[in-house]
Length: 243
Image 1 (cartoon, rainbow, N blue to C red):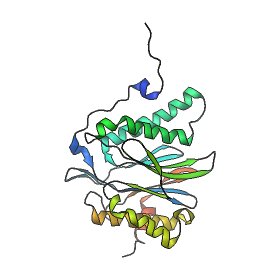
Image 2: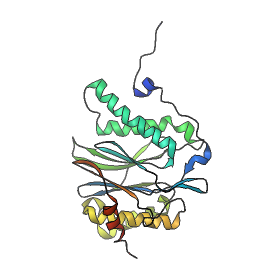
Image 3: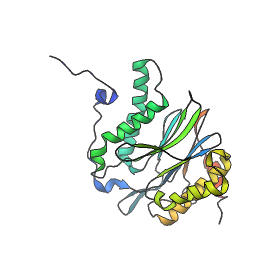
Image 4: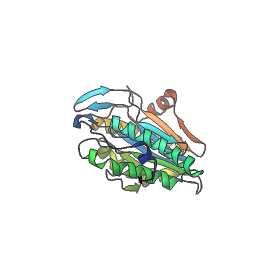
């Protein structure tokens, strides 16, 4: 009896979309920004269900590997499931082929996971990430956003997703025009602008928590890898937000 050969990790583990109740969709604001030596990824910590605030300590930044970080918006449980799948898919590819998957390949795998989730997304189980990536072969950083069908777009040094992102989308470009391109500016200045943007989003979107009562999550992607910021580092930036 002939069996269809396993093509990839999704076939191996039977990764298929599962139904997600519509009220599991939550709002948020997640941001990725270039700076002169890498990328910063910032996310609020509020998880909602409908009009209810369920949790103020949600972890919305997922480190897929040392060169790839995503920040998630959409159905929280489904988003965590997809990120867990992606981490294993990257490792599976490397073990199967005996070499590391390229930066382009990782981004294509994210798009593929989104395309495979389209049916459930139409039912309310949307997973809509933004990504920061470092291509060590080309020594190049990039930030990306996606649509629900998996199409990938490279941001102009910034990317944002979630219900609060629409309220602040034009501010990214205003800051770039008045202070210079994000990718030319030092990390400390970009971090202050990032938490300021998150606070502005919270002022106009009830599904996004502020940055003072509940500190956001911040991760940095550089040539040395990925590191998370401590509460003290984040608080120092929050205290510099213009009043």
